Image (cartoon, rainbow, N blue to C red; front, side):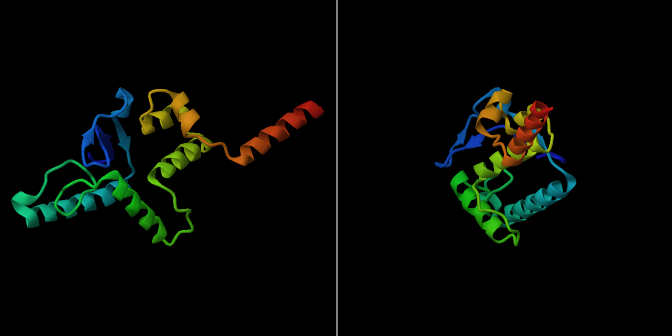
Length: 156
């Protein structure tokens, strides 16, 4: 993690093994805002404090989220933590999986006018079609708007 960005360069499976990423596009740098950067730096400080406590038993990694001893958290467990975070956020949010949040991000980013190629890059997709085919879910409002537009054109 650099100031203002997170580098994605490997995966983790549910058997606590690091894995190669699917495609060369999966290797990427994700830019983050100052607020998130500050929160992640707080996480890094917590890891450093734990490193001092655990001494030689601390597992040195470059992962953002780890157990107290530095070992990485398997994706399955991150999912539980993510759902708990949503439940305790005090916000009226639906409880979704991390993958659901990824899909929501893609759909909302496209709806907000973010270029599809940028969304594909952030998600690590090698083609825009992967993003559209698997991650972007059209909301009903644009469909209604398109229908109204076509009706108005035909009615003229």
